[in-house]
Every structure is written in C-alpha cells, then in structure tokens.
Length: 310
Ligand code: FDA
Image (cartoon, rainbow, N blue to C red):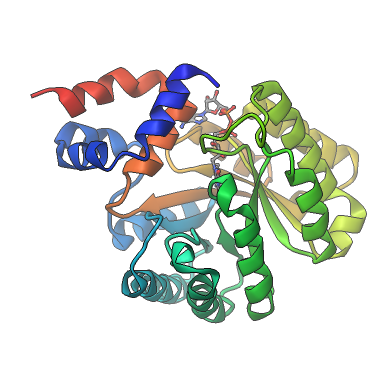
C-alpha cells in the first residue's frame, strides 16, 4: 500500500485528530467539496439539483461504530425521517446505511432490529435500500444481518469490495439469492492476506465482478449491478461489455460520490446511462473524509495546514 494512503487510513481512526479537524474552519471548508452540508435539508436540496441533471441519488447519514444502543436506535429513527422526506418530495433517492452505525458492535441482534425498522419503512419507496460494506472484520456479520432482514425488503442490496480475495465467492452467494450488489474497490486499511495490494488486480477484479452480475443467469435471478466507481477507464470497459452482451442500459447503473467526477456523471446521464450520486451529510465526517483523501492524496497538504496551522 502507498505509505501516504496507509498514514491517512491510520489517521481516520484517531479520535484526537477528529476533534482537531472538526474545530478547524479551513478543514470544514475543504470537506464541503465532498458534501453539500451537514443537514438532511442540505442533502435533499442536493438531490433535487442532481435530479435536474437526470442523476439519481443515494443518501447516507455519516457515522460509524456507534456503541450506545439508544444512539443506534436514534440513527434508525433518523432514516425513517429520511424515507418520509424522500417520499414526500417524490425524489429519485435511495438510502445507504452502515451497520456499525446501527449498532453492529453491540451485537447482530441490535443491528438486525434497527435495519428491519428502516427496511419496513423504505420498502414503500420504489428504490433500493443499501448496506455499505465496512472493514473486513465486519463482512461475515454484514452478510448475516442481510440474510436476517432480506425478507423485509425486496430490494435490499449490499456493497461488495473488489479488493477482497473472498468477494468472487461471496458474489455467487448473493447472485443465488437475487440480491442487488454495489461493486466498489474498497476503502479500508486491510492486510495483504485479505485484500489485493496491487491496484491493477483490484481494477481487474472489479471488472470481472461487474461482468458476472451482468450475465443473463444473474439478472434472471433478480440480481442487480450498481458499479460504484469514478474510474473512467473502468466505466468505459463495463459499459462496452454490457453493450456487447446486449444488456440494456437501464438494467444496471453507475454510482459516484458527490463532488467527484461531476463531468463524468453528466456525460453518463447524457449518454442514456443510469447514474446515481451518493450524497453524504452529517457532522461525523472525519473518518469518512480521511478515506476520501486516501483515495487521492492531492489535497492533503492544504488540509494539514488547516489542522495544524494557527
Ligand atoms: P480510483 O481510486 O482508481 O480512482 C479513479 C479516479 O477517480 C482517480 O484517478 C480520480 O480521478 C478519481 N477519484 C477517485 N477517488 C477520488 C477522490 N476521493 N477525490 C477525487 N478524485 C477521486 N467503499 C467501501 O469500502 N465500502 C462501501 O460501501 C463503499 N461505498 C461506495 C459507494 C459509492 C457510490 C462509491 C463511488 C464508492 C464507495 N466506496 C465504498 C469507496 C470505494 O471503495 C473507493 O474507495 C472509491 O470509490 C475510490 O475508488 P475508485 O473506484 O473511484 O477508483
């Protein structure tokens, strides 16, 4: 792993750095490049603006590793409000949750109970309800919660990380149950024993996983591909493979993060592809923002000045 990427991912776990960053105006300003604001209203306004460009949205309230049961329950309550606001606004918006924010560290039962409440409510929307994939220590438990809640929501989907060696096998299980899958490269600090260290291998695996999801038998079972990447070369390869196999452009979609590759997002929509933008909001942005920096360390100097400067 690139040493700077490793450092940034290590920093993402530091409560001290988080406290420092949250206090600095310069850092907060830098963060706005990746999120429209901290409130749900900010996120919904962004979703409306994106809809005008024929871009759908995925909304996520930032937070992870919640270790207080009442707080985890409050997160689920918040998502019920999000679903209500999406429905009232007739927005083409989906929701994505992190299970550790819904209490997974307190036990699977807590996360299942909270996710089930969100699922019961979100099934009234036409779109999908997504589960983010967190670090490798959570993968089995994430699938356990998914299995427990699957019957509550017909379009419950999960992210799958192309950097993990295990993902090709996991994908077969997900396809067999007709699950929606968001393929992503993977954003956490993982040892080489579980995650491919070479970017070229991750990119190839990403492509293979997407092609597998586009196959007729996978689609026939109800599985769905959302390719979550900003990698234009990979996007072009996936679109070409889908066209060559005769897969209609509305039978899969691309997804990107708010503020990244805006031109590519617009280009895809104009070319008749489905494209969603994941809009994050909330005050707990530090670990999430550090992962974004680790993906592209170009802005790091500017941000460090904001953290340590006077
Ligand atoms: P790559 O890192 O190769 O970047 C390709 C190009 O995109 C770069 O050259 C650059 O131009 C641009 N780019 C990428 N990241 C950028 C950044 N931060 N700032 C500026 N430009 C950037 N991860 C995870 O572990 N679990 C999850 O549930 C999710 N969910 C998720 C949803 C969606 C919709 C997306 C787009 C991503 C995720 N991720 C994720 C994050 C994912 O694992 C990965 O870390 C990032 O998408 C970066 O990888 P790329 O595929 O963009 O390719």
